[in-house]
Amino acid sequence: MHKRMPLDEKQEMVRRYKDGESSEEIARIMGRTGAGVRKALREFGIELRSAVYTEEIKREVVAMCDTHTIVDVAAHFGMSTTTVSRILRKAGVSLFVGRKIS
Image (cartoon, rainbow, N blue to C red; front, side, top):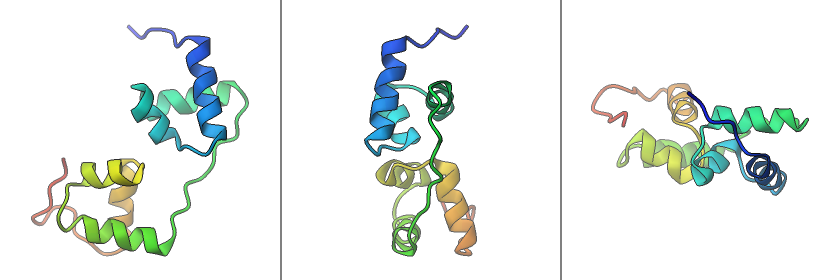
């Protein structure tokens, strides 16, 4: 059973998002899921930003994955593991040959 999210917590999420934090960063900080944060933001009429990563950040993600897990890289850059995996796939990096997923 899911607990209903308190209004003050939702308002804090809105404030943080408007201050530039990503939904994933907010989720990690507040102990919620990214989906829960995005749902709360939409309830307040907040238009969600699309994450646009520069080529430099994408190169850093690929380089860091040589020595770190995808989970560690995602936490470092404040993005989801799905986003890291997507960046790696588009860069032609194999996700399963000698690469830790978690």
